[in-house]
Length: 236
Image (tube, rainbow, N blue to C red; front, top):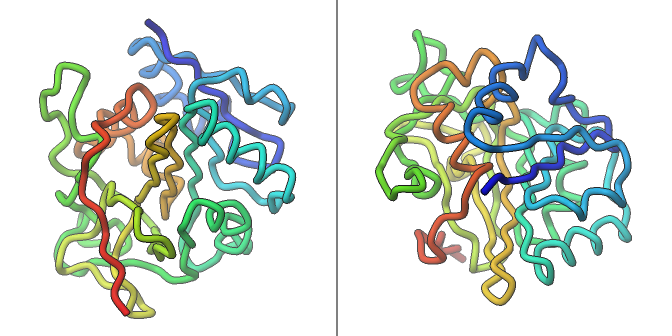
């Protein structure tokens, strides 16, 4: 059974049809039975199982936020919102117009790792701390390490936020934040998910060829993890 993904471009996101950046993801997704359509009409997104908002540059309106809440909380869809580090192009502010409704905020910081990184570049954070989407449909672990480049950390503002991936203990935020790099909220009644990623380039043509980024990306798009998982405890 194929999964239908709506890749939004109504908020000036990176386009999935951009061959230079996303041709590998598009090709490998098709091989894995994932149909990705580029969608330029907001109202049409509700036809898809999974909705991707990859680096939106236009803030979300209150009505659009309500739409996404309905898709997740009533229709059981998965929505993936991906940002970037340092609040580039006001990306954290833009993402937060939607993410706050699901108990998370993207911090305006940068997460680096002087020890666990790719080719000595501290901005190319490598981590094995992957709590969700690390198994394929046969429940076999096929994700051991991923590279999350130029990422911002995520601040949980509700107690039911689940860790998807975080930096190793050597990872550091320049603002002293916990290095939570991908997180999500599950709606138990509908089975819908809202996933927030601190970087939008973990599945571009450079990153997706490294470590287990391809498997992680396909797992994220193709199927849902069990409802149980690591829950981040928010301190005082």
